[in-house]
Length: 292
Length: 312
Image 1 (tube, one colour):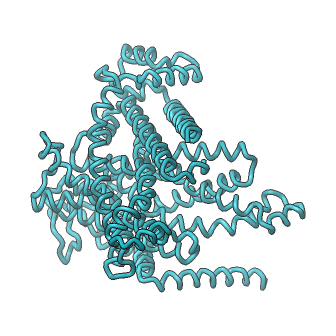
Image 2 (cartoon, one colour; image 1 turned 90 degrees about the vertical axis):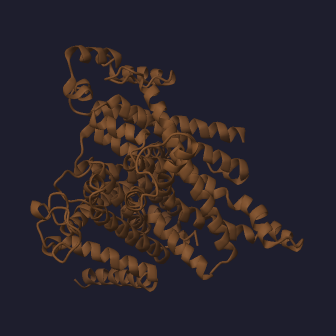
Image 3 (cartoon, chains in turn orange, red; image 1 turned 180 degrees about the vertical axis):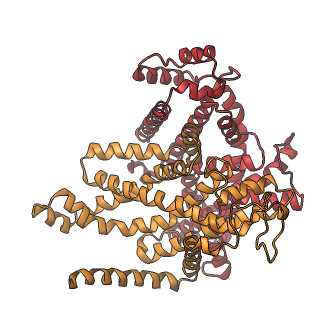
């Protein structure tokens, strides 16, 4: 029992150290605050929104910001602020499963590539290189053209296109670790491959991947918003930042507020995740810090 | 160098083959009969039969794949279901618009990024260096289509300084129409390139041939712009080559926002009319472009830096 409680406390303190490190850097602190605010507003979205985000109120259509409607209303009289908050929930609903799915699959394939036989490594690398050779949006459009637009399609596309990135990093880490002494010792003791990879390799790879997750988030959010903007992502009337921009683009000559309301959250969210990712990278692994 | 070139192009060719196979299998993996999906609601029995014969759908899958590759080698990407024109003809008609947009974007952002990077490297840790660094990170994050929309709103709709749609006619008009779209695509690259140049410039400035140049009494400005920049610019070449896919993706959105003709508009229009051969043709051409530009970037890098030749 004491053992079971001791382990979480230790990892908690490590987490606390990392968070303290990020918070010392002004940009990192800003990123932490922005990401925290987005996650908070996404979780409690239903309590925060002043209006039902899909309820129409034609009388108040296309208004500018006011005390009643903080960011104005759209062409159907729906409250933009409520749609922005709900849109954050949709963005995270796409980003989180896609990124963690990609991380899990990429991690598995990458460790297998790094630890397994050479031919398997070559094969997986060729597969990764090929998937990366499709321009992301073009690949997304091809998939949407074939299976039709939906939230699941977006999640699939994001997952498929980010697996190679995680896979490559996991492979490189595994390659550098596979001949280290503690792994050789495990092998000499006759540990199974599953045990070596799962118990001994994994903790050494996951830190680097966590940094990638934060860095990857802006790309994913932008892709979801982009596809929804083209009308090929999340279907209406689901509020999404991209869908807001789509409406705003159609009405750009009538009201500027929809484009502003849909565009600013994306800019702020990408900024937050980038700042957080950069500073997380500096704290977790100073070796990765190249460009400064 | 010859060996490296051959190896690199063999890899590029292999990647293309696998990419085409994946695309091909993806089309076949879609549930339902591909002809009805391709033709959509407009399918008549005659059209269906014609397409089945054209795509050799009555043959086995491996044979279909072989025929598909055979067609590709002859530059045949299939036929547009509606107009009956060759897909390759339609795609290559739109490609120049997209390339013009991409190259103008990368040109202005590379020039500005390199200048900023050099300046920051020459004055490290001053306030202007720090401002550049922060701005770089901020701009890297901004997705091109949001920048495109916001700049469309501000500069075309509200201020009306620039045209909102189309590509224009004649040199000056074309250039004028390019300003906002290439601003939107290039913005995230300025900061990225500036950071890259600054880092590699600081590295190069410590090398002995620069010290020699200093000892000869050359001015700092001349050392940076003539001797150091030549080497410090290398990573930029690689990054642009590898970033081609990213540039193509940004171009798709920007073309839609500014209603410009090009690959992006072609693909989106073809998706709404369910014109699959065109979608697939455009995706294949853009993938080919990306693979070739990545290979070229590797080659240029190897040509300028012999150490890179052993990497692959």
